[in-house]
Image 1 (cartoon, each protein chain N blue to C red):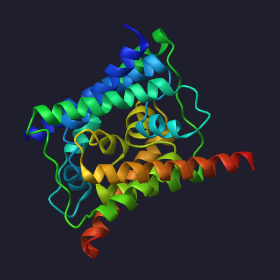
Image 2 (image 1 turned 180 degrees about the horizontal axis):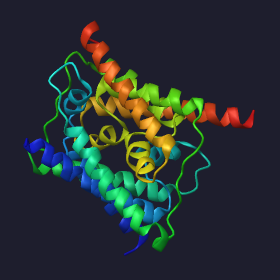
Image 3 (image 1 turned 45 degrees about the vertical axis):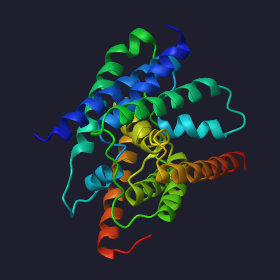
Length: 135
Length: 143
């Protein structure tokens, strides 16, 4: 199969996985994050399934297929600050980037509002990091 | 066991498989915030696979949502309006690119490849999410 077809298949599987797992439903996500409420552990099952398949596949195929090595980098302040901000935004709306984009096809208003402002936030962060590196 | 847990696990398996195929084919870590975010940088050269992946993602989710009423469940949590989604998008976009990854890039890929910084990032954004939802609950209000 050509590279483009495999990439498309990969995208299809990702979107199907998000929808099947219920992660395109923002309340299912915020219910996972709501420890003081009626806690819903579904998101933990999603992470477990994804980590199991990806982690095992990576472990067994890394050498054979010459996959990229461990991408670990020293912990930076931007990693911590960025991850805190991401968690705050995630908790507010129940959207992380994948599910927000996945909801575009179903013309969901919140996703149509979220994705453009997300793009703007990404542009600002990437501009800041670039100017810091160059400066 | 609740059926949502089984669907969650099955969906997670698909996400893991997708990420593995993406890594094998592109030799890049296919975290969604990076795949999307780098399209917004003018000198990114490998644009076509990113667009193809994202079109596939939208199609894959859209197809299942269209085919199944159970999958199509879509509920906005209490007290969240469109203005809040605009603000949340801005924060998520900034945070994921500034922090170098999101639920897929750090949570699945980086963690699955054994990167300790990704494990730390995942712990940090999860805790920040827990705290945010708790504060939203006790402070109430509609945005």
